[in-house]
Length: 246
Image (cartoon, rainbow, N blue to C red):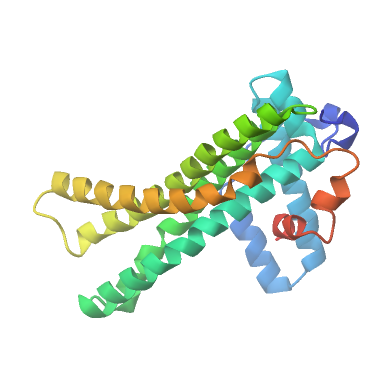
């Protein structure tokens, strides 16, 4: 069970706050200009606390609220989201390594125009990470307390589908937006034909990345970290903790 004592955000301070879209870019600009890592770390901690408070406030039921309020469950979910999306992005690099030079050199549009294919990456990253976090949260809910072998097997099978779904969502959104950009360079005869071709390419990419992402099912088939393995699972030196801190 999630432990209320491990909540990052005190109960009385949990209030929903809308975060400005430009907040993180401004934080990064401050870090680049001042190189003040300590201040940047403090801001990141505060920002993460607000995100957690917003997630707790928006949770649909008490069980989900309890999981999201647990600091280690929250870190596990966030780190899983980052790791899963990073895996999908690494696979998509092979596609972009062909797409960008093809339009820069093969079609003669130049590197500046071809670099616009990178614009959808942040949007796809945000969408994909959300899907991975939802998969991780669902896994923690399904696993429950002291799960039996039968429950573990069921959660494992569900987690394969959830990991596939998260990978598919990232791959589809990235490639669909990228191929949509080709409308301005090598357009199809009609916009409807362009959308159909883009959706077809994006579906293939989604299936490929989703199928590979299914291997990460164990990441989303974990329960809430217990009091004995908190530091082992998400301690300062762990790989997931380092991902979460970056």
